[in-house]
Image (tube, rainbow, N blue to C red; front, top):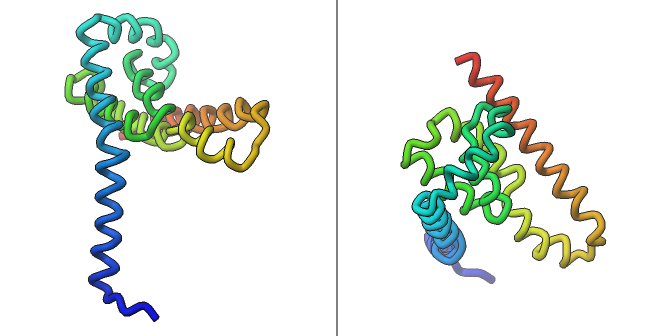
Length: 153
């Protein structure tokens, strides 16, 4: 029989949450900030922003916002970190972040999930593109819908 009190259970859960944050989320966010700084210093952020500008304009976003989606594809924390870095720098604004957030979570961390989930359960690698495409299409739809909703405010 388990003699743990509600306080013990809460503290155990908080400890596990802290460990997840410190071991998984924070490193991704810090990495994202560092990558954006490197891209800014080298001028690649502006170059990539120009390349992606026509596509991102469909969603009402500057071209640099594509970096958020690319980082999110690798890890949700990375996408959030890039969005925070671009927001802090004034490259994107609050409306842009609002448009990007659903996409981060709808298509985020696909690279991680490919190994952790799809590979583990034995999904044929030929189907990966279909799974990834569904997530990306959902993310694009969410960005368009969010942009539409924001146009009423």
